Image 1 (cartoon, rainbow, N blue to C red):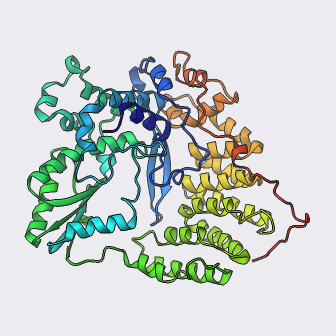
Image 2: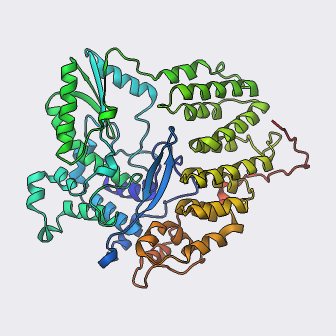
Image 3: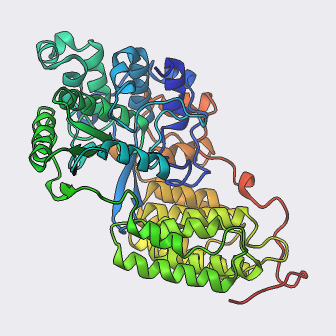
Length: 522
């Protein structure tokens, strides 16, 4: 069982903002919640919830671009209901033991060395996942996969007590006279994170993963009683069966048990396959075949050839994260001088179309492939491309594309153009405007001006993290009413959700053109 104190610190300091797999891929690493400690949360919960027409709190939204160019909507809940929810989970953690000990769930609370309690780790490394599939398939003839349709947005808050204490007790103890029951309190805090709505939980914070596990863990228990051999990865089910009829029985069973909690199956993603089946996607195998010999340096030609192959392969396999996989291979490869430059140039070109590749550039920069030593791609050319990428993602309302472009610009000490700044502000994206405020001193006034006309409480909530950072920096007064003490409490405890830009600047001065640095045009 995960220790309660570790759980609370993890939920607040490490699992508040969206960081699903590798830390800092969803959001650039200057976003940080380490100062949002349990002590801060305990101070916040002393503040009464607001009531009336604006009861409940809205949340900051963040659009993450997936490999198929479809955006996934992530959220950052307001700190007051989120603090209450985290403490409620902490205080009643022993009631969640069944999800920690689940034999079927592959994504469940654990004590991770980076401080997180939930990590969407790609369901384990490839070897581990393959072995699990092989063990599950042994002696079986069919495999069926299915998942819950729109799982997190479909979670019904009142279904959480049903899962935690059972249908009968939960329904017997509802209403104002039982509002203080621990399971009803969790229901309440969940709703208050989302304007008192009963439908949906935020995608991103680990609290939502725990809630999903609480519900689907009960579904799993009923499936295990029926002796199905299955595993579940969040809301994705994979079951191996002796016969096709048995596989169909599994789908019906999942559908029946999920419906008890007002969840539905995604019929379009339900697939039956006769065994044996490969345990590795074909495109992964194909990309592996194209990798140059181990420990050899990649030339620019080899980089271009590999990425060309990946681009063509992605067209044939739109269901897979082909380009992200290939980009990571290249970024972590041993590259020669021209290979370094060619890799960055190619990936910048791809990133214009595929913003999910932008985090990969961080690794290239950290490895010294841009503006360091003799290996230099013209800083001004790179800056122009990053500005153009930011503008394109502002047009398409892609939060991650804007934030990551601005991160790279700020890190390189490069200029954010006025065109880019205006496009970012016009997008009205809270996280992107905060990234602009972080990356460019010259454009902070635009961000401040945007923040000054907010009066509707829910609108303030939708920008709370931006407004708080401006308040913390002394750029604006507290925009909330005088009796709302959340911002003052956070400031008193020195909570800062941004790491200083200086932490990400090159350790050595960036050489300018004409300073004896070899410029290369690719």
